[in-house]
Image (cartoon, rainbow, N blue to C red):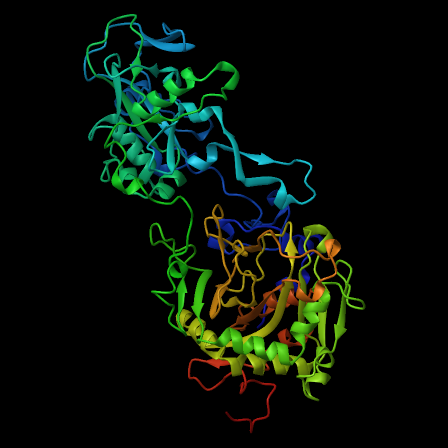
Amino acid sequence: DISRDWDFMEEHQVKQCPTELATEKAKRERLKVGMGVDSSILPGDERPYTEYRPNDHHPADKGDEKNEQDNDEDDDKSDGWNVKSLEWLYDNGVCLSSGKLLTWTSNSEYAGRAVFSTAGIDKGEVVLTTPLIALRRDDFRIYKSDPDAEHERDTVDKSTVIGEELLFNYAYGHPDSPMLLVPNAPMANFINHGSEEDANVQIRWPSAGSKTARLFDWAYNRQKEDIYDDKFESTNHNAWLKDHPIDVMEKSGKLAFEYVALRDIEEDEEILIDYGDLWDDAWYEFQETHPNARSDFRHAIIVPDGFYPDNWLNVTDKYEIAEIQDLENNPLEPGVALPMTWAHNGKALSPKYGYIVGLEKGFSDRFLAYSEETGVIELYRKLLTEQEGFRLESDEFTTYKPGALTNTSNASDEEMEFFAQKYKANIYRFNMHFIAAWNEAARKSVIDGLGDAGFDLAVKAVGERFGYDNITCFHASYMGMTHCDKALMHSDIYATNDKSWNIVFPLITVEGTEPELNIMAEDMNTVVGVHYLKDIAYAMGDFGFHQTRPSNYFNPSQSDGEESAAPIRVVFGAYCSQIDETNIAMLRHIYDGDDPAPFADQFTELPMREIHWTKTGSATLRYPEGSGLPETCEN
């Protein structure tokens, strides 16, 4: 039987569905996606997908039987927490300070507060241990901004740096690395500069086998189920030194270094470290500059030679997708669907919902030619430049016969009706227009046009990649725009049992512009911008969150009358799914609620009225199979 659960959702739950982000927990446990309510009012063990997971990063998770230690029977375990004894902390914990330090006014006229020893410190002794916040160099820059800018995309001008944050002075780094490390232990940032002769401490990575190494090796490498106890053994010492800076920054706060005495340090001696020759040179130049001509002094502390590993040097801190980095020398194979992977570490953005599909050479041009012949592109030029008779208000939609707008169409083209909708322009401040088939003649023509251009190869690639039995392209639409100030991060498809895809490819792009599309990684924390590329499609499945990036090609409200030459961007999205008893109700919930919603009757019963690919190869876009076709219909 077909589940009808999604047909009976309360109105307030349905309204929240399209605008809320799914959490990892929802994706993992397939929780009810439409529920935007307090979990305390849900029956049984149901949980809404809007409920964020509890903090699971504490080494003593509440109520975790695996975390129980063989401590004294009288250990305080109130409130369910497994509180550690002082003996356990002494054996396994790490004191950030040696206990021989205090802060006081520096002996230097150029410094403020400083760190002093309160007792003698032996050569080689660890003076201070500090966790490190790993940040991009760009995070410290202050850019020109205009808080009164009309458009959000113009608020920050990243082409103009006007300074650096004060925190930059406390960061450690290498001039050839994009990553800086900021100590955040007490007193660490009060250690002042001393010349090579005066410095009495230096930094080093934790020594193998030390308690510091053990603790931070656990913190950096741990999996969710890992427990830090006296049985934990480090198997990947100082793992951050092997990782790319991007990966290190993703684990900010889980690495550390130590300040170690270079020589015996006497009681009441100021603790000093050499900030490096580059810092020295910058400070000298600052001192030589007339006070009235100075800007604020800003310079990172330079790490010693060899402290940063080679893999941290001369690399980018930008997230880039490997499959589209060097298409000239490594083109995508047509008819192959590959997970999008990070260039810096080879890991997938999302092994479940973020894929890139190679299309036949010339596919984009062929489907563009079809769209021009049928008048759709001409309709876009009129809508996007708001020519007389073609100006829509926000969320307004109407139907057109674009075949009547061009002399390249034939009689059948002129019978095709398409609806156009200016989508939420007031909310998202962009002029995105959707155009899609409104009558059956238009729907069939678009499907045939896709097939004739070679889209069967893309459908086959997805079907074979995921082992589907069949695929139906149940909806398809053009998306055109000339400017965007703000857009919604959203997922077009969700909770369909990992059987549905939005396959997007470009028809018209504007050269020399920034990336046009944001794609969110599965960790829900990372967003990467990508360019639309000819003969390449992006495939986003269940919970495949994406977003139109800010752009400004042309704004009709600021037009100078040259509408015919206005740059526009047009892309196309095909929604394809193996529709069966596990997801037909969900698809009905998503798409029958749309306004407008042509062809909603396709989700009322199984088997589907049209199937455009089968694993036996017996169906195509132009020659489909399905319950809605005559039994005599053959390829």
